[in-house]
Image (cartoon, rainbow, N blue to C red; front, side, top):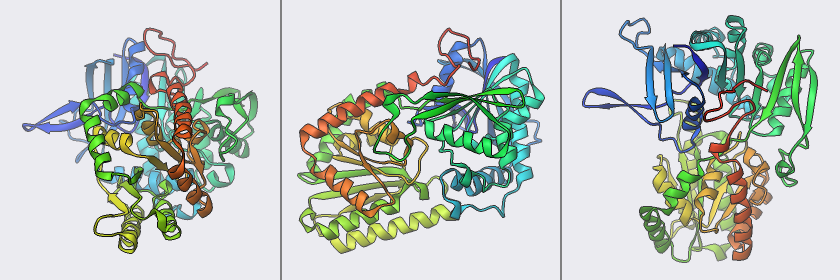
Length: 495
């Protein structure tokens, strides 16, 4: 059955687990809500489809089930699972996407590694995604492609199915031309994106950067601009824009440039925060802390997340402020997402070394300044720590949005708590009532944390009220990139 809406995303829309020797599909438990949010758009169509990859020892195995039908609370949709070998996944995802694209997208040119890239494999994988989407889509249907590892899909798809409406959404930052154009495949990538009817980003800065890249590579005319909403103009952050491009024209084709900050599932988080188990756990944490203030940092082990810079800042504060001895504690959660990659292993090792040094220098039998956790904490348990923390310390060096800071704010139904946020996280454009820090500046980082620790209750509550209002405005359920509708409205065309 052909589909009015096809979502193309590298992850499958569920988790596969084995029970009693059988494979069972379960709802994805990722707390960021991206997968369930995308599936919710299926409610507005008669039939939808999802295209993802699935590891296969032998892609030619006739027993591999490439297409399955799903019927759940989100509607009726099919899932095309593209069989990829472990080597294809390694080349496509861990090397090309993570060693070449990832550092460039986040502005780390010094970490860019071009040599091992197998560009032919990247093209092949993207072509497979495009073929599957073309096969699934109804005449004149919409295909919505997600994230940088599928950059070439729109161009291929336009060749295969010129009748389709094609949209693309970036979940990462998008850098300026002097950084992006380091990529030798820049023209091929941007040409593919210009085949879209709509290209979406989290914040206006990333949209403006994309347009600057497109204009540097092709004869592109910017045919539409608009003023950025006042609520997204934050004077204290590095990512603020006042005017954003809204439309491009290239070789007779118009491409809409949209901005749609993704959010978190506030109702779900507030429900967890109100649960008896959560409140009991948070109370136990507070009782254990006593008068000690808890600083909480949560993120992946990644050089973009600023974990090393945080720990060094914490060490400087303890060194300069002996009066804070036994008065503060840092819980640093750094979960490895790519254990097989040398770069991330090195970051994890350095984080462990610094945390050990801090505890060795300043700790006592009764007080350990840093608690380092390198495993994933169940989301329900994490909400308890959000509720118990005095300060959430979220200072990535670069981040497309960052949903951890929004999770913290959504969990604080008590109206208290302080958020220290990097000005280089996309979320800072929306959350300017956080204590904004520049993680590249020792003075700024240290000052922000000390300000957060000492902040009086009335100011904490004033800031948190404003933060919660901003998070509500970008609730995941209200996330509607331009041209997309939920529920019974079947209009999905890019406007």
